[in-house]
Picture 1 (cartoon, rainbow, N blue to C red):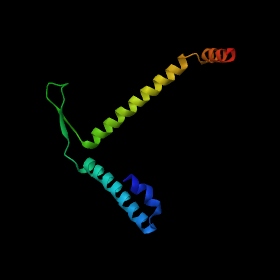
Picture 2: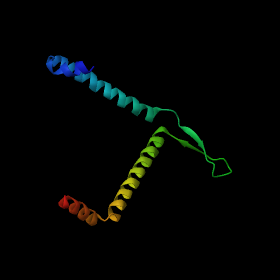
Picture 3: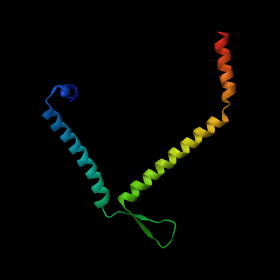
Length: 107
């Protein structure tokens, strides 16, 4: 495949267009497949609610599950950014700069 991609620029323009059509069609088919699984997938997973004694059940659809995963990921990234901000504000950058500068100038 690597050899084919290295020589694709030497092929005819019709061949390049056909290759582009196949690649874009494959990508579109993949995206459509994921979309159809989310929208028309199973009726959802039944999750027992353990917080009540009545045994209430919540139905979680595929889309809600993906949405929850994305929300958790964004929350984790937000926490990491806040930790970096905190580390930057607690670090005394000026003193560190002075130390590095003095060491560089003394050599």
